[in-house]
Amino acid sequence: MPSNPDESKEAKEGKLYIVSTPIGNLSDITLRALETLRAADLIAAEDTRRTRKLLSYFDIHKPTVSYHEHNARTRGGDLLDKIASGKNVALVTDAGTPCISDPGRLLVEAALERGIEPVSIPGPTALISALVVSGLPAQPFVFLGFPPSRGAERRRFFQHNAGIEMTLILYESPNRLLKTLNDILESWGDRKAAVARELTKMHEEVFRGQISEALTHFGGEVRGEVALVVEGAAPGAAGKTLSGHGSPGPDLPGAGCPAPPSPDWKQELEALLASAMSAKDAAQQVARRFDLPRRTVYRAVLEMKKSGAGD
Image (cartoon, one colour):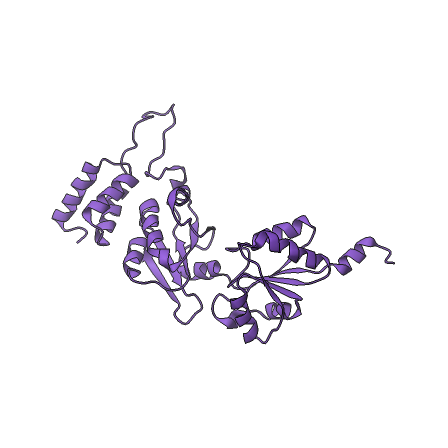
């Protein structure tokens, strides 16, 4: 018998490997990832069909099982039991690094609760690839993942993150890109952004410009997965509401009265008119965002039309 019971446990227990795979170009896989997949006893994949194509390309023949959002709770226990019995399990997602936008986090949490130490096999991830080519500040940044698809939860998402001064990174599906760009424009303003589509693939595209310009550029059908990198809020905006104004404290002069309008609202109004947004929609959006009387904004629209601004 071994002199140390812990040595027996360590020798018997397998490993959980969190393996990053390419986000598009298969040449981006690492040598260590290939070695790990070849040595694994079992590969847990978000979509076994997509993963088998990857394994076949590199001539890797290992058993695969599905691990996705619909079976994560039940399948996770089975995987950890196999690891506890001495099997090595490699976790992969459809593309990129597990646990970022898939249920891999649940498996890692459950593994740690059982004393199983996960091992990271690093590699590609779309959010970092998009960030480094965006032209926006790479630090600090915050990753927001996929916005909620609809309803009050979606409105809260954009409202809650409106004042963050760090560079913002989001994922989005191609069929909701225009909706998200519109929501960003309305909630966060016409900020600088980079829209990265089909990264590392044949039709890779990175659009850089204002949100209003991105709406025009992506006006037609959009294909491929998308990562958005968006400029953070202006300094001091973290304490502001979506209307664009802070709430003065009760002991401050003018408490309870609207803050004076910032001249920036006219610049945003000009930008919206220049982006081919209708005068009515532009005026309504600016009035709502900056908490201004609509007649004030409409008057500014008329003045801009007379002077030729926004044409």
